[in-house]
Image 1 (cartoon, rainbow, N blue to C red):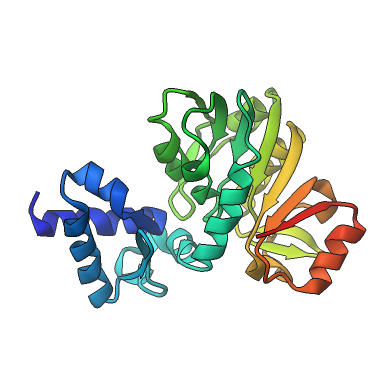
Image 2 (image 1 turned 60 degrees about the vertical axis):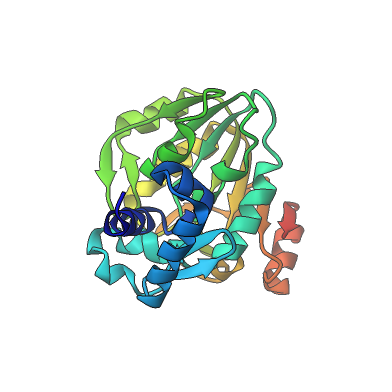
Length: 258
């Protein structure tokens, strides 16, 4: 594959996922990791990507050059990336063999599958294209994709039928994301169409786990879907304001700081 073709492929993946990894690109494109490093260096010099250990993330504010339809997801994915990775690495350690888990829409939860041991037998319920891409190749994982209308800004599939399917299932652990977490106005997301699917995943789950970087706390977005007290466990980074640490613990919730 020529360099121009590789670069175009990498930019497309960045626009969809917000992050790329050298090893995965090397295997996918059939070239050396050194070649991928040079490609990523070129994108960094072009102000399209920021380099991170083992890969690159979409550079903040570059999404407008990559197409408006991916703006919201890719912009979110490039922010607080190291914190999101730490949150998801810890969350993955909670997954046990033969669990049924739900992985929510979001730039944080998108990081989760890469840290789940590939040898674990699991059932995974998902409703986003980016999560499906990360899990479908593992033969140890049974996949349920709920389907429905595709929303390009979040890569989410959404439908009343998908919500009803989730309600009929029983989930061991639901990994839920949020765009805003406020002590008074609750846990919110940026799109009304996310709400019913998020609620269904929580209602069907034994353990409800909120995955959120600390920047989301104290913010309120337009669509309410839960109260803090609806969760059993909250995993966030160690920069969380002590004010919110006290609120969470006063509610009797388990809090893990990473």
